[in-house]
Length: 438
Image (cartoon, rainbow, N blue to C red):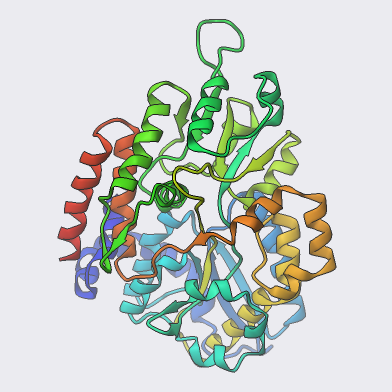
């Protein structure tokens, strides 16, 4: 993706390379920022208006967020937060960078914490360490989240919520295929995927596949595939340097390619691995996703259950979820943004967001509340994700992570499409990565 390549260079390169992007994005940004720019001075009602860019998905979750946001705006009449959906993370990148280059960023950004290094390098963020040190809310936040908030011993963002991935499956399809137990190892997983791949109407064509794999170069694809890579003892950082080529990474991709070759698995549309249409309509029996899909699945009225990521060499999953960044604007808007962050981190928001969406709360009080514990009892699938948090591994918080992710995504896509062998795809992507990092 051409625009994704922009984020891997120094600031001067940004300014030159993004001139075209900036021109085409300026109208969008100006429309988004009109409210924010007019809020440098309080209006007659002393209301500070701030903008919040996000990519909350699926749409059901956006509706839930907007309801909770309305609550904040009502309870805080001196602050008005305008939430703007600006696309999925990979679609947001050019808008984010263009807003920084044009000196018109949002007040608050919702994004995966792996962008921290690049935003810090661009000197776009308000540091949060001092605020965090003096905040009473910090003692309520699960310490496991600190790794996503910190770069070079400084706090730059706070978690919105968290999650990890597991395999959702359709119990009714398992039963029809005579499958009585969920797989624990990759070999068992491959065998079950093959059994679930069927010509259900006897027309000579496969109309039900065992598995849907995420494909594409985007961050969601990388997020979904890293658990398998880590399970196969693969690493993407070696000797403190990004390195895509390892026996474990190659092994994980080779195992997946075999399932694709035999039609036991099909691929998502490029960078649409989070869409559940094929799973909901029964065209695939298994799909990797996370607890954020529970609201959507409940509304679909289908049967579903969850099992942990199958083991290749060791158990593995990746810590997910997005963080919130505060951009440098002015003291009034920054102060209003920090008050909004405290609302998001608070017990009430975290409990309601978890109950209504399936995300895992990052507030300890919310985790231990009677209401949430009752929710877990009623939704036992959540237990799988909570248990996996014990082994969840964070993606690297490094300046060069965007470049690492894009090139890993490219090699995953090339492998799954069988354009190159996994080894060839990884080696080629590593060379491109090294050139970008130079």
